Image (tube, rainbow, N blue to C red; front, side, top):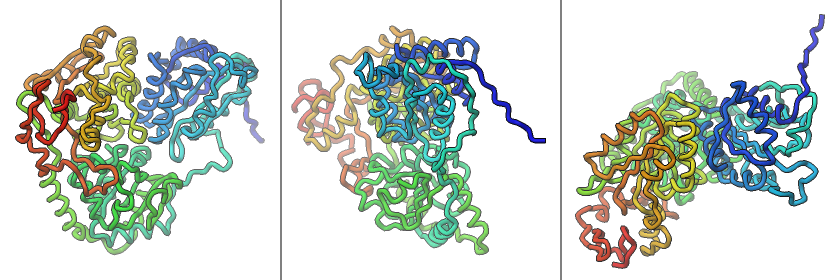
Length: 612
């Protein structure tokens, strides 16, 4: 007897179909902000919240919603979801969508739209968000028929999280949300998209070629990007590195993929990477790129990047393989799957690998580590940014850390040693204002974890309104602002490359009292400026059951080193420990305006910007 499939259908609106489909796909939290065109969806959302099916987090700005959804995904590996209305609500999402696209973060973005009959008439709050976001999404939809809603949601989730992940936009006209139809749910996994078949397994011939290169390399280096995080390849990566005794360096996105306490770890490479990682990539004879895309902040001068090395490039996106550097062995596939295949092939071969072959190379790297360590300066009368961040890492070694963008981000990348998915930072787009809403998203996803946002005094202001969201939901993140009164990275570049012309980078005038501002929102505010108070302040912050904003006053003109200047190769770093310009005793010039000490070669005061 042949069994017939029973299709369950019910009379429902497009808005119900959307909310139900999201719940069917396991969505527990939605970040958003309502408005006219999306009100039918919010009306249905109200019913779903009342039934306990989903929780909506009301942000204070749509950019806060998209960054929170982004970090929700980064922290969990699940698809983040955010809502916004049409017109300005939708366009306020653009920066966050681009952030997720650059960093390959799976996200579903739902926007309201004017009714179908009004599309193209320049109706009130109409924008073509579909067209605006085409270059910065993995895929996008305008729902013209409510009967397509369940299929579109299922496709959106499938596309967002398979292959190379990315954001998917669903634009919903207002009347689609209110129109009734016979709704038939589409279960997760029931979608098959013709022509969309991401390659996950490596080519056997290329796997064999890669093993042959690895077994003969004298100075190999494993270069790991965010693709290893996405693939959940942490265990396989460690096994692979230990088997072949491969030193490991990661990108900003790859932090946490490999244990940075491990003796094979070199930390981050690139513009503000460790000196030993940058020396290693300049001297290696085999570069094994795993889930990385040869970004310009990593490579420096591209034609001199790993110029002595043959390259194996593993990535799930075929468009990335050979885009910036043509590899000798290209392998398209899921990072975890390919590493498993490499390990299996190595195990099949009868002759064991000579692990001592790379020992002289590891000895040379150990020498670089001794000669060029990351430095944590301590000044007599002021905190250094490095010691604030290092102390945070010591006090909360298992925390989830989010960052904004700037010097503090690079110091955090240098001194924090994170586990998988516990490093959350805008890498490809470098979005200021990312850190605090990102911390909100991570904390909502993981309510029992410690989540700390490391921000700068300039970048925190770009989404400071989200203190209201923290207060409303009592989201217990800890925000630490590394406060130097400047757009720190801009000031550093102006000092180094623009003849000390500090054009519009000083933030001192108009800077709020952050403690009072936090308290005005109903968030605990704290301030620390002395070394003897730092550990106690961090401990008090971490012990508080609720959101905390800690304003850490640090040295105003501290620069982030090492630094590879634009257009130089990775071995040409400024600010190595033996660089005499870093000798603290040389600060002998005194500013007549503010009294700050600085180098005698400076033309302008790096503290107040006055001409010396």
